[in-house]
Amino acid sequence: QRQGVEVNPGARVSLGNLTLEIGGMTDTTVVKSEAPLIQAATGERSFTVSTENVTNLPLAGRTYDQLLALAPGVNSQPGNLTPATRLGGGGDGNFMLDGATVMDPGVNRPATRVSTEAISEVRIVTSGYQAEYGRSSGLQINAVTKSGTNQFKGSIYDVERKSAWNRNSQVNILNGDPKAAQNERDWGGSIGGPVGKPGGNNKLFFYANLEMNPRDVGGSVNRYRVPTLLERAGDFSQSLDNLGALYPYIKDPLISGTCSVANTTACFKDGGVLGKIPANRLYTAGLNILKWWPSPTLPNTTGVAYNYESTDPATRLLGYQPIVRVDYQPTQNLRGSFKFVEYQQPNDMIVGTMPGFNDSKEDNYGIWVPGATLNWTINNTTFAEASFGANYHHQEGCSVAGGAPNYCRGGNPTNDIANRVTAGFGSIPYLFPDAT
Image (tube, rainbow, N blue to C red; front, side, top):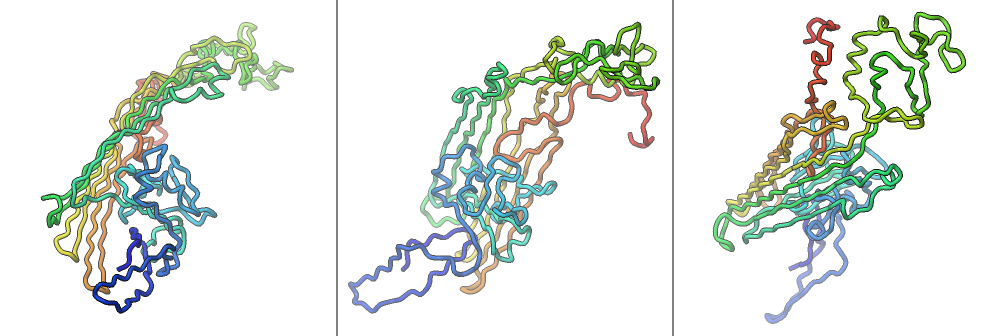
């Protein structure tokens, strides 16, 4: 008997020689090793984040990619589209869930950030890995989901982060702006156990987790320089440059010479007003382009480079992730499992930085990850495993990655002004006649 051997998914551990000593019927031989066993079966460099660490470590977010910072040789960047890379480079990483890849098929980055509540262990292989990892030359990261046991177990949790607990940023203080709202919650519950009597001779087990990720954002101040009412009529006599200084110098392409502070010979002048373009020289398409921007909300002020200001309204976002796993073991040598992971959020309109002009929404975006695994121990020297995994990922404008809803302000435009015909360009011919 040898105790204290830690078994991790995908690991190869050599136990060494076991020595049996002759003893009487009342003798008991206890073999105890204080030093951890080295991994001598392969030349790979790997690290496993244990179940205890997954359960007990406090995390700023509820996704397992935050645990990658614990592994040596890993450059961890939690929250980024690519949350971890190998120190020194050497290729992109491959993110897996229960041995099946969960990489975004469009942009080759991890697309499924599963809640730590549903994760049993995370294994990171940094180099020297086996031929089974053939998809990429970077990190090989495999997160293993929890499965049901022969006893019913469950959990309820609520993790909160509130901007009221933070101080205002230095940028806001210097600009005299209020603190933006950023309230986040990750709450949910899980349950797992046998399909049958607890502790009995069960063959079918289940595990389910549902996590909700509500977010409340708003209060950020946006400032821009937009065309003034005079500029929309071709009058730049009162226009300011990026430093807030008067700049009415608009070059007339029909007059030879220069248009500058020192020489205004070739500048537009209408009725003796420097910077004013005659009405018969205005271009209708150009005037229509100006309609794509709102009118200024602030007066032109010397020394101030912006004339439009808006404050983001309070916005409620909601993301949710159900996870279901079923394990079936009909015999001691045969075991199969099936899982389904999804991440979704409602397709609500998101108010843009210029309300009424660049509001947008997504269209049916989300993640669906089914997977199945079959393990068969043929004999004491032969083991067969078959795995299937798929990653369905839909996006338009913004990419949802799981773990938190996406505050997408670059989706499909919803305002009438964004329509080509409504904006006044319906009569402009297509460059290619069939491009309709």
